[in-house]
Image 1 (cartoon, rainbow, N blue to C red):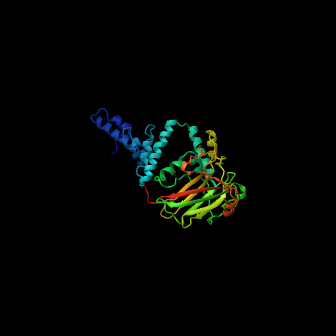
Image 2 (image 1 turned 60 degrees about the vertical axis):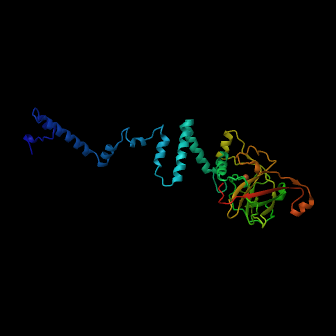
Image 3 (image 1 turned 120 degrees about the vertical axis):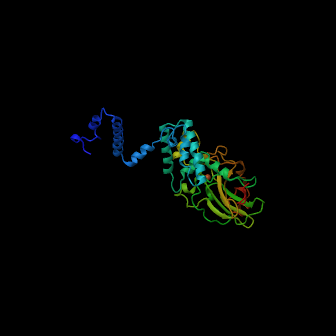
Length: 353
Ligand SMILES: [Fe+2]
């Protein structure tokens, strides 16, 4: 209803005219109501709701805000509803360790940026024939630790070691006794071996995949201009007695690629980049655990300082020389030649001891 002069009781003027009546208290209440109404009308409904929901330091919601002391706990809470329990377990542990590490060394912003750049460089160094991330994992000992945790021998099986970054091409099928090398470019060598189960029984038809560096320490993929693909690689099938054999040359020790970020890391930490001489093996058969391992040459340098920590004493083998023209002729190698015999034992696939 309109009042004198058209002044509304809802205006400041009207509020002043209320005095000094007993209606003063009611007038003040109207003014408070008016203020509340005007404030609410200036806000969107959502903003108003957010304002009302803003947590105070004592509310559960506030506990989700970042806090240095509880940083890992806060991040872990954000993944609590991950449906894959293994993913949740792995990420929880990763976040715990990562935050502890950052706090332990009090990582600076510059160091954090350098680490991001290092990982970026590592990714960008990867190609179809070079795996810089595997190299990084190798030189940090992570590859060997994962391998050891997942390939226990049960005291019987042949010990495993890392696959390394050079098993990148499918090895060509070879017949037993084939020559996989240029015999004139190194010490000729006859490799023989057997594949048996944990009872000592032969495993006929076992697949024996081998790959190695040459006598100068290079893999075929590093010198594709010199060698055809598949050079110093072979996929053999064991005979009915589980035996395999092939001709090759004795590999030389070699440095891992040093022209990338992993090389820079080794240099910065005063480490040499070399791996002792070895032949890679991957041996498999249905119903058996696939074995990935190396055969290390006993007289090689760097056996006890392998830059990827892959040497196990049971995998170090002598490569004795044979100086016998008759034998050399029989095996199809120049005299003298070297030999090595590798007895491989595979565990049953379901053996978990
Ligand atoms: Fe290798």
